[in-house]
Image (cartoon, rainbow, N blue to C red):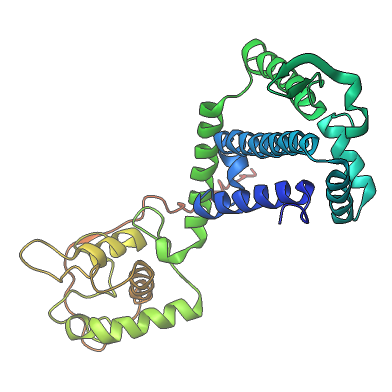
Amino acid sequence: MRRFIPSWIRVPVAFFIIFGAVEFFIDSGEKPAFIEYPVVLLFLFLVLLILIAIEAIIGALENVMLHKLDEEAKARFLAEKEKSFQFTWIKNIYNKLLGQKPIEEEGEIILDHNYDGIKELDNNLPPWWLYGFYITIIFAAVYLVRFHIFDGDNQFDELETELADAKVAIEAYKKTAKNLVDINTVTQLTDAADVSAGKTIFQTNCVACHMADGGGGIGPNLTDDHWILGGGIKNVFRTVSEGGRSGKGMIAWKAQLKPLEMAQVASYVLTFQGTTPANPKPAEGDIWVDENAETPVETVTDSTQTISN
């Protein structure tokens, strides 16, 4: 199989299989694993170097074996190998990356050493290895200047920045995600669909105590300005969620209703303000005034009377 599948195909295929496995098994979110985790990039780089080194060693052993063949067998083997390379220019590039002498020219670099008939070649370092070594030196220099001289942002700084951005994004999302509403973010809903949904919830769960028109029965009157636990959307939402006074009053609805549903029914309850129920229950609690409401400014005009003698 090796004879008919050249190494310039085997190495990339093996590398991308490993690369795909890494991406599949490592959860790195939206970013690729080798970008999110620098150690993964280092691992993939080492894997690539190992694959290339294995191919180089196999190639060297193959050359040693060729020297032991007779001329006819050597020519036959080389002819079969030549047929497996369909793209000559790729083969040439591959050979240049290995930096090896052609077999026909190996006599120029054979050393005088001889070990049981095995001779040693004085090949130069493979260009891919040499260039990779130079790249690591350049990378180390840039890294040193960037992070140790100019105090570039490190991983802790990046983490703090990302956490701050995430916090802002979460707060922005909460403002638009109605189901994430809570006592701090709830606002009165005025959309017709929300008010209608609140009415349905009120008629299903609340009319037994407050009557359909909000006039009150077992529960207090919802149409006057008096509130036992405070008025306004935040107080009404809290009362619906946590329930009424301890030992008496209505139950907490947070286990039965979703946050959006509690906001809807609380908003519908506030629509009873100022209406006239059929049989209003006497007022309970205190008059509630919204401290955040704008106070109308009265304009006083002084009149000046001119008396003419």
